[in-house]
Image (tube, rainbow, N blue to C red; front, side):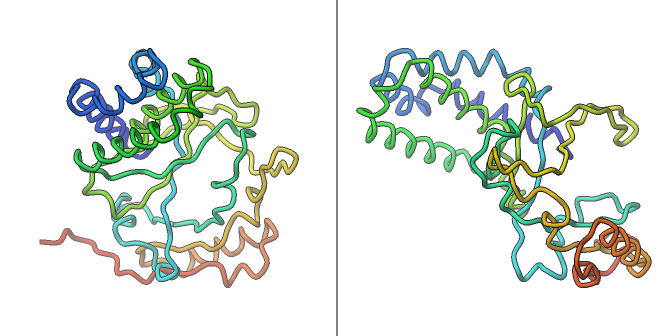
Length: 268
């Protein structure tokens, strides 16, 4: 994550919701009617794990990309980066992010930008769906249903951002080595903004036998967009050369400069 304040925001919001029995009553009662104890046990596990969710969850962040942004990218995202650095966006093929596979032990989810009311409405809808499928859910084990409650809260706290950021249209791929140990992801240490940090890296190698395809280069990359800069020409040449080295066909057609003006002073 660029900013772990996202997690703190969501954790505070989810805790506020859990502490308000009026807001959770419909879902809690519906789950308890389905199988006694699963709501309390799921919440208890979530609260036990919350410190480790904060410190041991690793996130790959991507943003939805529209065709009309194919040559420019999105201004709000360019503005998220340091003015002293040249931002470059990689437009990737989405197939690897929507495949049903446990090969990576990493799982995708859309980021939500809910208001409190939207959050409440969403979980009222969950309660309605639980009630509609009570007979099916009652056949599952208590442990399995408790885990569903826990994972519901886990994704809420890791995929909920301030509604003012909705223009980002972010998706996240989450992993937590304590919950989901992976043989494919490996831990490294990188210095980011002068701070040593653990990072989990993914080798870009397909594994069709485990339904993991589309992550190898060059098939992963659709195009590269260069952000606001007055040095787009040499940057573009360097990226094209690197794409050619890894076997990308017609790399010249896959690298574009956004053409957005480079502002050297703040607006206002």
